[in-house]
Structure formats: C-alpha cells, structure tokens
Length: 322
Ligand code: GDR
Image: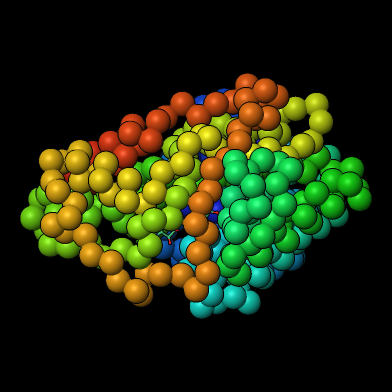
C-alpha cells in the first residue's frame, strides 16, 4: 500500500485527489494548518477515510515533522494562496506561501527521505502575457500577478531540486480547472452560483469584471488523475495539463444562463472593482505531451462542465433557505 501526503487538502483539488488516491488503495494524509481549522469537520465528513496531520507551508519545522510522521511515498503540494486578486493585496504572504512554501517542502523531502516523489501544482498563470499560442512545456513564462510570479519560483525550484539532488520532483502546469467544489470567489463558480440563485429568485444581478478574458477550462476531477500519473513514470518530467480549447468569460456566462433558460443581458453588469491591475487575456494549453506520454486526456467538455456546475448549484440553493 502506498502512502500520499497532500497539502491544500481542504481545497477543490485536494479533495478530488484524496478521493482518487483512496480509490486506488492509497493511505492518504492531508496536511491541515491553523488552530481549529473551520474546514476540518466538513473535510472529515466528505472524505471519512482521510487522515490528517498538522503543518503549515510557512513553517519549515512543521513540514519536516509532517513528512517524518506520515512517511509518504508521494507528496502532492497543492497548498497555496490561489486567488489571483488577493495576491496584489497580500503580495509578500503570497510569495512566502505559494513560492517559498514549495522550497520548504522540497527541503523537508531532501532532509527526511530523498526517495519521496514530489508533485508541484504549477499554473498556467506563469504564461501570463503569453509569448505563443497554444502554450506548451517550452513556452517562456511572463507572469502578470504576484501569484504568477510566486508560482514561477515554485516551478523553477522544483526543477532545480530535481537537477541538484536527483529527487523525483515534477511540476504539472495546470490550466484552469473547475467543479462544483470550486470556491465562490473564482469566476466560474461565481457565475454558476449566481445563475442558480437568480433562477430561484434569491438574487437579482451578477457583477463581474473583464468578460473578454479567455481561459482553457477543464474539470478538476479529470486533472487530479494527471497529477497521479505524473508521479508513476520512469523519468520525472513536467507536463502541461489542459483541454486545448479556450472560451471567454462571456461564453461561460451565456452558456450558464442559457442552461436555465434566462437571457444573461438582463442580469449581468460589469463593475471596475473586479478588474485586475494586469490581466491575463488569453490562455490555451497544448496537452499533447500529457496525451502522448501519460495517456491522459481531458474527458469533460466545456458544455458538460458548465451544466455540471449549474445543476449542482441549483440543487445546493434549493436545499438552502435564504
Ligand atoms: P484565474 O481564475 O485568475 O484564471 O486563476 P479566476 O476564475 O479568478 O479568473 C478567471 C478570469 O475571469 C475574469 N473575471 C473574473 N474573475 C473573478 N474571480 N471574479 C470576477 O468577478 C470576474 N470577472 C471576470 C478574471 O479577470 C480572469 O481573467 C485560476 C486560479 O485557480 C489559480 O490559482 C490557478 O493557478 C489558475 O486558475 C490556473
């Protein structure tokens, strides 16, 4: 039986990955931070077989202890400050958690057991102001936010520990991936939840920022399978994980409102407060390496993803009275 340690266990990807690894027969530890973490009871209810260990990406000693206590074969570093707008407001904390946190976990592995395999959740935000389209493993980075800059550090320090110490450390450059478990602050879930609430008469309008931004949106449940596959190869390598298709925020809006038979123009307004100081205008990944070497492919279409999220929010909002 293999053992995995996952940081970011209370997030969307952490939960899907834990479920996937448990279904494969893994023993799964989630690293949880803070005193009386409010997400802990919900996590233990949704994934009863998860085991939890305390640790914080800001605290080197706690990471060494977490790796020593759990004795993992594989570590998945999904923990980060992941909301791009917050990274302008708390740039230093973002650098520390999202950037240096990767170094601290790699140090814990180097010190405790160099045979542990390491997955780093890198991001398409590293491409930022894109140099070519579609973006592949060879495309140069030009991050556009403190978050993107921190992820770029995390990416390169992962490559460096692989090259310096021979650690099986890989980086998955994941494009946007969504699900009914996505936080409400991210645009897809903000839209699907608003559509459900408007349909049920609980909300009147939806305020958004840039409707023209284009993203390569996939389903998180598909993407965690690629993360696992990346740690099962003979050689450690980095991979782009994407669908290869791009859609605008407006496409998502139209599709989501259309799903419940409403005309988005009657409800959506733009508000400058949701605009970013520097925007990533267009992302579309080239997943051909992952298809060729991992045998991985995104299996959920854009239309299926939007439908899944709107239906889940309709069910949720019907259950919740407000
Ligand atoms: P992103 O995701 O920044 O791509 O990063 P997000 O859903 O926040 O934004 C996507 C695009 O939508 C535009 N947008 C809005 N965004 C939000 N959040 N709220 C709005 O009201 C709104 N209106 C328009 C944004 O400007 C942007 O262009 C996500 C995160 O999960 C990262 O952690 C991850 O690394 C990348 O995806 C891949």
